[in-house]
Length: 56
Image (cartoon, rainbow, N blue to C red; front, side):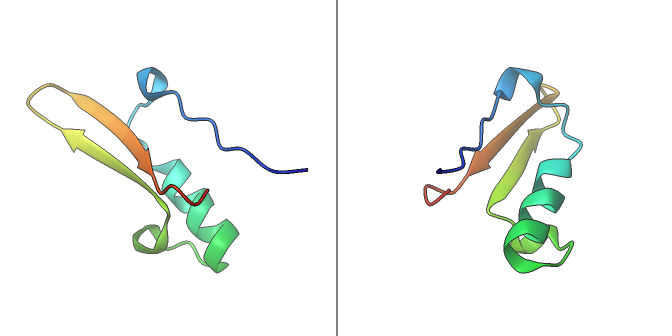
């Protein structure tokens, strides 16, 4: 059965735990730079948006 990663941008708090979980799942290391999910934050609007690669 295929796995699906569901992202709800409206629920994103900018904690970046998704980056840690993704990097550990794919690289066996807690290294956010190796993550396939990246959280972009715009401080002026206080908005965080998770973006993921199209391979997942």
